[in-house]
Length: 97
Image (cartoon, rainbow, N blue to C red; front, side, top):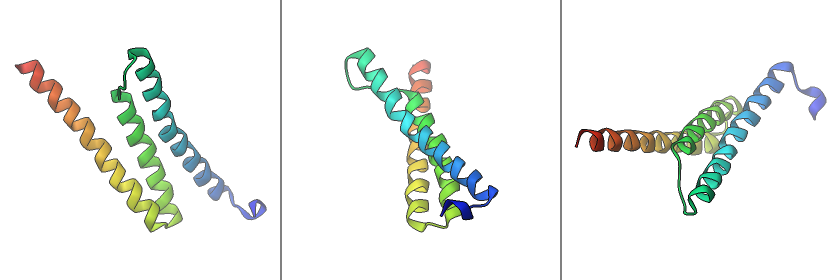
């Protein structure tokens, strides 16, 4: 199976693994932040890692032509971006109050 892979295929596999690593790292970031606060906490870095991992995995899913994977990642990226928007909007509103 692996002997038939071209250099381009290996690059896409590496991109997919990078995306999965970014996506997985968000849970470690969230866990550490929660442990430090001794309560459940989702830091802003969680959402940035979600977007980075989601976009990278979306690119990989498009390359693979997997509609289920594409739909799942594109929906997720929208939600992550919306959360960052709400965080920023909330901060700017509280700063002006």
